[in-house]
Image (cartoon, rainbow, N blue to C red):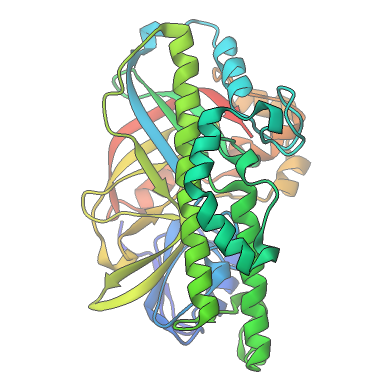
Length: 405
């Protein structure tokens, strides 16, 4: 499906979504008035309002970056791997597999498995291989936080190899040939969140320092100018968070594969793992210029790129191949996208509704997960139809186990 709508209130805003709510539209109109946008803003089919800047937006800029256009869940993204297991290998009752994954991977914000109360590892319980993964990142983190101590989180190593809460998940899925896949969604956790919040505040300070705040559509769109020290520090910090997020996903994938091997014995991984960010910055060339691209709720989809587009905890997901659409800055959606907010979902639905909408899936169905009910999300089939010119479907995955943060 080609571009469905263009907003012209500043730089053009090219929209692939068949539906966009008024709050997100207003945000996008504000964002389009930033003077250093390169060509236009690209808006993905899963677009919805976000804190500071719209989720599902792709913004190319020359000479500056808006930290809120990346957000605070830095490096958040997906990982998926295809195994040699088949549906016939799986038992009728999948609870023990879910329970073992939940014991192996700290998740949520409450105590689980004797660990600390922020969904991380307790100091006495942190595996050596988690310490090793953190060790590969620790010196860069020390240098960064020595210079910017307020960017430091005390949940850094303890969050490596942990899931988090909200919409983060680990799933066991079946593809169209009944092959078993492992798929998960998480990012840079507490360390990245603290970095994101700190530099958004620093950008606001920069605007006040140069008396620019009054000229912005709103202060959330405060920016940092290239070739300044704070800009360089921000880029280094975000790139560190993206590396942390990638290592975090690899650690959780290893733990989940170990759980499956404890149930089924050794098996093969049939294809190279896909590991892609959907909240991040990247230096790229578009329309003949080297620019900074911020994707907040979008993945890169150059021609041939493999990516992952998940639905909700009760809907199918997709392994996709990019088509390299230039107008989208070679991007596509990062998921289904929320249709209603968490508080509204809790007002509208209860545990009975959640159980009905996740029937046949081994997943948590308690009150604390109602805000993630499938009805809170857009129709993933419509989202995929909206971006036919951005990606092609390689595999369709249906989850049978869902571990929710």
